[in-house]
Length: 196
Image (cartoon, rainbow, N blue to C red; front, side, top):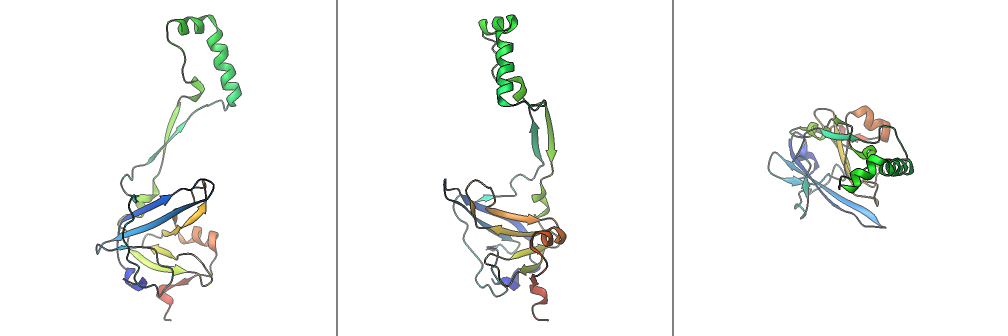
């Protein structure tokens, strides 16, 4: 397959392989499974040929669990670690605290670090599944892969390397063209406009 052949295809799954190197760089590789059964990488240019690829061992599907993501809140009073430890020590040294400890019912995890509220954040990866590829965008002077625009307005790309521990390597997405342009500007070219 080449870059032009991905237009109109539907994304069935997205896989990410990643490797973290302590004191080095994090690496990642994104593979996209299309409705024709082909597995591709994100192209580098309009003229990219042979974008099909083999799935690396240990790659993981991003679509295995598309449910919303729980966010657990702890420490409602926003105490420092020292304040939490001091409060725990004070509770344990009280008469009731000493009695509980004597019968084996010590506090364990300080109550300030127990979950007091759970909220759910929307998992936006669900907006990438079963979407048709609308266009391919790229910048002339870029030294990275291009950007795939989906029918619902999302734009996806990949960051191949990033500083260790930043979490920046892997799939990157923008929920619409405006947020993409805020990050990268408007000097990109579209595959659909290439021959015009």
